[in-house]
Length: 148
Image (cartoon, rainbow, N blue to C red; front, top):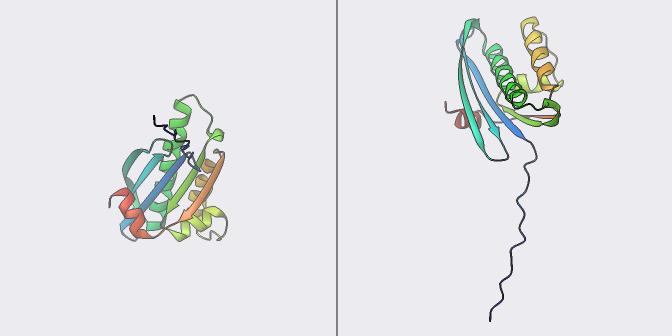
């Protein structure tokens, strides 16, 4: 008679509820602005990729901010649409723009008035979530994640 040991492995809960990876740019600087983001629900790995085209002439930094804002708005809408409170969820934001990540963290000053408004909007939206981590990553990682 053999005895079998039952495995007592536990599935580790993700450290954050969602991950948002964003990348934006422009064709010319300024030029036609574009962006992409991927939103991942970490519990089950469900992913949503969005591609964006922005009206008017934008700098690459403006397109990066607008892409971040669009991704956070999408997440907040999804959470509210499920009848939940954004404050109950955590988000890890990853992007390859040092400027956007550091300014949004409050570690770099925002001197450009157009960027200040975008940074304030991004910060306000992120402030609706329970916990947010902003992480800079290499461009190739962002490109791989969003499919550029």
